Amino acid sequence: MPACQPDQPPFGAEFPRNLRLLTQHDFNQVFARAKPFKTRFFTLLVRPNDLHVARLGLVVGKKKLKRAVDRNQIKRLARESFRRARPGLPGVDIVLIAKPIAALDKRQIFAKLEQQWAKIREFYE
View (cartoon, helix red, strand yellow):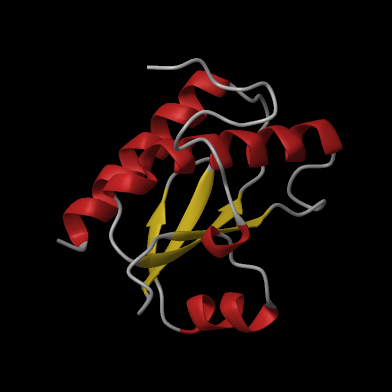
């Protein structure tokens, strides 16, 4: 396998616009009729879409996580976990809503996300 060029991400590591929920309309559709998957770190709202590709939207508010560093860390972890799990996910729109977290443990959060992706796969098969 050839080495990746410095300006190109490795295969499967990209997160292009078509895999993101970007507009208020997209978010409202998920909020209207979604199946919640809850953990102590976050809630995932999941709704099937007609695009046959999984898309992700993030809601990480200042009221829940005061420090920007914590909000950014949750978003980075969620995006990375989604990138890795996306090939196995069905065509769904997912909104991740962060909950207040006293101490962030990256491994725990990443493990919980992986468990939730598996639950979503099982539920929508």
